[in-house]
Amino acid sequence: MTSFTDPELQRLLKQHFPAASAAASFLPLDGLSGFSLKVKLAGRTLLARRVARGAMMPGVDRQREYRLLRKLASSGRVPQVYGCSRDWLLLSWQPGEPLTPPQLVGYLEPLIGEVVKLHRLPLTGYRLQLLPLLMSYWQRSDARRRNTHWLRALQRCQRLREPRPLRLGVLHMDIHSANLLADGERLRFIDWEYAGDGDVALELAAIIGGNGLDSSQQQLLIATYGRLQHIDEERLRHQVARWQPWLELLAASWYELRWQQSGEQHFHTLAAEGWQRVTG
Picture 1 (cartoon, helix red, strand yellow):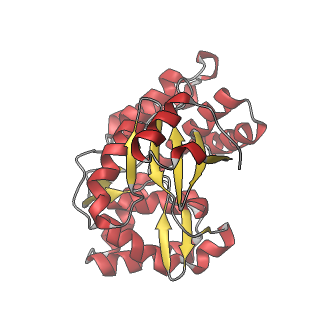
Picture 2: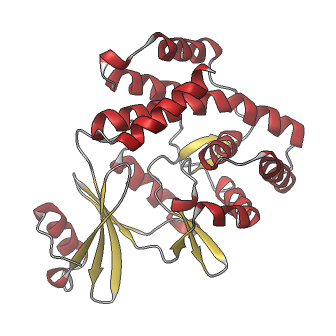
């Protein structure tokens, strides 16, 4: 833990925790979409998430995240929101240990149960739309990287339009092992920056693609979810498949822009793999 001197964060802490803010200590955290700090106060631990101006990924809006989490606060399924300023979002620290990718397979059935509970919450009013998001990645990318394969994939999505929702629910849209905390018998979701209302099948497709689930794991996910939600399994499987090309393009676009922003070879490699999947 170290000291930290961002005046705006200090003001936000003082506003909500006047007696303890002077003794706060800070630990920078690794993350893909912005800059976050673990904040230790007397008897309390917080998470401070900064608005990464100029480098924020399309679809990420801390003010929208703040409002969405407040709407979901009574569910007990999201971190408590303490405050939001122009540059910072202040949340409660979620207990638990992040899963590793191999561990996720063993937690698949409890994960499905948590996803079902999330999808049954009242809608937030923040509808997810993939086509404008995909267009935003294209527009913000380096013009020299906008090739015909990318353009054709976008035009195909424009022509087909987004699949009509099978059922609307509150979606997390970034469920992978690093965003799942094992807290005793409970799984907790963290990093809600991409959350919103959308087709429940879109979430399942994102879980499959984002975690590389094999055919038997996909079968378990779709069959168990369909049974718990009283949705016909074949209909659900077909709808998940309709979303997969959209998510492949979204993932490739995300890695492409992240590589352009960071220059990290890791993201360049993932972008290249993503474009290979998009182009077949």
